[in-house]
Length: 236
Image (cartoon, rainbow, N blue to C red; front, top):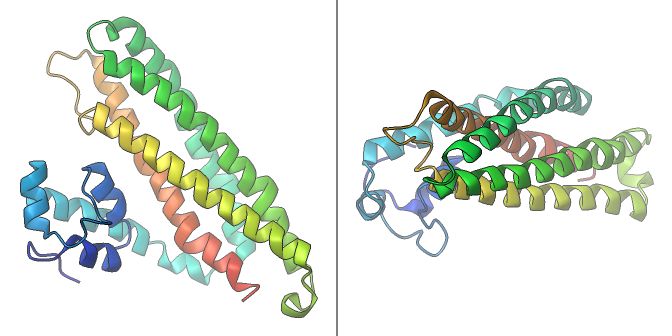
């Protein structure tokens, strides 16, 4: 689908994976306001159509680029979470939190938003830990148990089914919360744009926040569009 100004928000959301994240970033209503055209939405929010289009295409390409992962077995996908996604995101978060605290301490009096950002970052860190813990200690054991059955469709118990579905529901809820927090951080930071007078640490914080945002959303899209659907297929 080629994105044009005349497209409605609803049309783009239904055709371009990840566009919901971009619309959320700019506080564009893609639910009740889905009938609005992209041109009207851009005018209302003061952004250019080309900026919006490029960001949607970039996000969509990242997700579509993971489509080849659907050919991998669940064991391989779960290993990716353990050895690639989790360590990378955990390392980035542990690096950025002290920086956020430093900028809040130095600049918080004149820029109260950096204090709010620090507190939101602490909140999202707790939720990320819980979400990864649920994936590693809830979803993966449930998958392993079902995969160990000779005939999952015939042998799976109600308890095993509920364990899998419960883990998926907790993941979905965690993703929704994390996305909401990052949306608030993006708004507070003017979409990760530091003030003109900002020092290097201030600028580096916003740059790092945007990178963390991209990494986390990249993982959430992988989990939502690749890992979880593949897991649910074994009981379909």
